[in-house]
Image 1 (cartoon, rainbow, N blue to C red):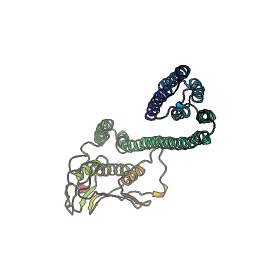
Image 2: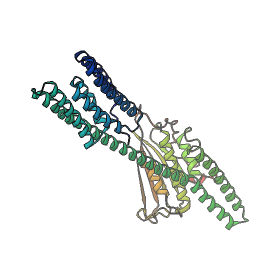
Image 3: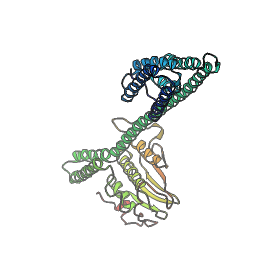
Length: 413
């Protein structure tokens, strides 16, 4: 099994130090001993150097090198006992042994290295200097404790890094899942407020035309249903390409809201209050979809005679109120979303609340319905996720009879 190598820079320092110490110790030994003694000792030192080089190369390549390390420790022990001049190389050998082995094997290899060094130095003193015997043992014990603490700290840091990495991966996965869920909600709202509402209205018109066929009124209803289907087709293409409403980014906001409501309502009153202010694209989009959904619900369910839509500009906010005097309903008894519907109010509320606004629904059976939305506007100079739209066109503060906003003069579109 390939052993885990210590840091590359420490490896290089250890290897270079061993080479320098071996050369210095070899020169010192040759100068102090006879040629007869030099031959076998130099040969053993060469063997140690060759084994050390083999271990260094194998460790660099990531190949198994522990058997070679056993041979190196054995050869080194014989060398340092026979020639204590080479004792300085024990430091490099100690770190190499701790890199090669783990657990009890590391302690055995380090202990053998320290014990052999102690025996060699003690022999060199003629067996009289106890410090030569205890010094290497104490140094080996101290280095073992220090190295063990370093390894322990490194393992703790590695575990912490692994935990942080795992937490980041889990967070990324959670954010990805939340993003997918949010995108599904957004797409479902877009489809509900455009394609679904339009198709439902077209179906009502076609059913009415079928009941009145072949009266002239049926042709008008078929014509209007065809117009809604064309608009649905355009909205569907837009959803496929960019999921944004045609003309939303430009043009006055009141006209966009009137057009959205006019797709479903034949007659309604529209007015603007307050001083018009720039409205970001995402706020315009929400107001448009709320208007479409509310108008479609009025057409399908309210059976109302009068409908009023009010766009209001407040300091730091924009409001939208949709009132009808139709059947009304109990807001607390709205059924959960299903294949038959039930997404409208939920989608409206989500749109408004995602922009930091509030949406309220006031209704009761037989008393009509009021849907009120208020969305905050960014302060001047505050960046927005979308460019501010063109300021909305202000309507006259009071509608006069006979104007285009008079419900009695409203013509089918």
